[in-house]
Length: 308
Length: 314
Image (cartoon, rainbow over all chains, first blue to last red; front, top):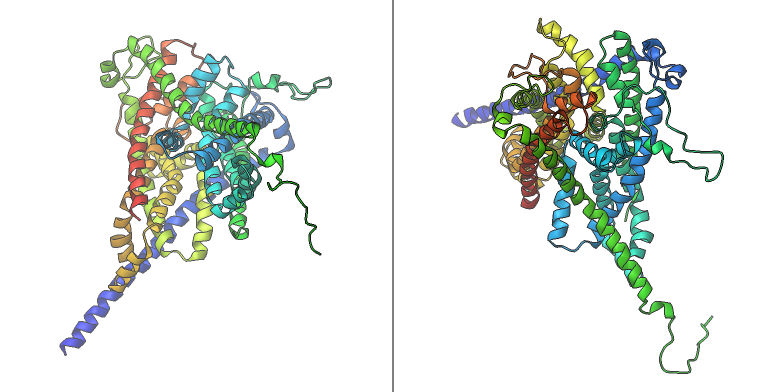
C-alpha cells in the first residue's frame, strides 16, 4: 500500500515540475513575441505615417521650411559620401590589424595590450568617438565640420567590428593550409595574401557590411562634430570634365546625413515634419536591415559551403 | 614517359637563384610586418587619443570649476548667466533612464537566452537568432522616434498626466533595444556549459526547467553577469533615444515619469548649438564625456574580467 502512495506522490511531483517546463516554454515564446511585436509596431507606425511621403520628389528635393516639399537629397548623398570615407579608412586598417593580431603577433605583453584595447574600444559609447573627432579632426587637424571628419569618426567607431571579423574568419582556416604553403616555400606574406585572405574574404566582407550598417545609422558622433542640420546644397561633385577627372573638394564640404535629417525632423513640434521623419526613418531602417540581412545570409551560405 | 635526366657538371645539385636567401624579399617581408603592426597599434593610439583629448579639455574646465562643485552642486546650467556646474542632474537622468531600460532588458533578455539555449527547437532558434540580430541593427534614432511618437502616447493613456518627454518611455524603448545584446551574450555563456552537466542533471530526474535554472545558469553565472554589465554600459552610453524622447532639460529627479537630460543628451544639446571652440561651454561637454567614459570603462572592465572567467572554466 505504502509503495503505491509513494509512486502516485512521485508522479504528481513530476507532473508539477513538467508543468513548469510548459509554463516556461510559453513564457519564452511570449517574450520573443514581445520583441517581434515591438519591431512590427515600429515598422508599421513608420510605414503608415511615412509612406505617403515616399515619392520620387522626396529623394530629389532639398530640406525645406515647408514640410510638404522637403526631401532628403542632401542627406542621402551625404550619407553615401561619408560611407565612402569610412569604408576607405576602416577596411584596410581593420583587416591589417586583424591579420597582424592573428598571424604575426608574438605572444607578449604588447599583443595583450592591443587585444584588450580592441575589446575596450568596442565598448566605448559612440558619442565619445564624436568628442574625439571634434577635438582631433575638426579642431586639431583643421578638417572642420566636413565629410572627412565625419567619415573618419565613423571609421574609428567600426574599426573593432572589422578587426574582430577579420580575426575570426582567419582563425577558422585550418593550420594545414598554412603549413602547406610554407612547405612549398611561400613566405609569410605570400601565405597571407594568396591563401588566408582569399579564403577569409567572405567572412571579412560580412564584418565590413555589419560595420557599415552600424555606421549608416549612427547619429550621435556626427551631431557632436557639429554637422549642420539644414543643408540645401550638394557637396562639389567628385568627378570633373578636365584632367585629372577626380576632385577631392567634397571631402572638406559641409554635409548632412540621413539620421541627422531624421533627428532634425523628429525634434520639430509640427506634425507634418514628423511625417517626413517617418519617411526618412523608413528608408534608414530598410537600408540597415538590408545590409544586416545580406551579412547574415552571407554567413549562412559560408557555413554551408565551406568544408575544410 | 621517363623524365629526361639532366646531367650536372658538378656534384652540387643546381637550384634556381630565386630560392636562395634574398635580401630584398626579406626586407619586403619585414616592411609588411611593420606596417601591419602599425595598423594594429592604431587601436592603442585611438584609446590614448580619446583619453588625452577628454582629459586635456577637462583640465581647462576644472580650472574654472572646482571638482567639489562639479560633484556636489545640484544644478547644471552651464549656458546660463548664473552658471552652475553640478553633474548630479545629468547623472540622475542617466541612472533613471538606464535603470528603467535594465528592468526591461535583464528579465526579458535572460528569459530569451534561457529559452533559446535550453528549450527552443532547432528551427525556432535558426529563425529567432538572426531576427534578434536584425533588431539590434535598427538605428538608435529610429528607436527615439518610436519612443517619442508611439510609446509616449501609449503610456499617456495608461498614466494620465505623463509629459510629452519622459525618462520612462525612453528607458522602456532603450530596454527593448538592449535585449538582443543581453540575450545573445547570455546565450553564448549558457551554450558554453558542457553537455555532461545537463546530462548529469537529467539522469538525476530533473526536468528541463530545473536543469536550466539550477545547473546551467549557475554554471554560466559569470558569463551571464558579463552580459548584464555590458548591457548596463550600453544603456549608460546610449544617446539618441534619450535625446529624442526624454527631453534635454537637466533635472535632478529619481522619478521616471519626469523629463530629464542624461549626460549624453547634454552633449547632443550643446553640439546642436554653435559654441565657440575654447569656451567653457565647449569644455563642459568634454568634462561630461570624461564622466561618461569613466562610468562605461568601469563597467566594461568588470564585464571583461567576468567573461574571461567563464571562458577559462571549460
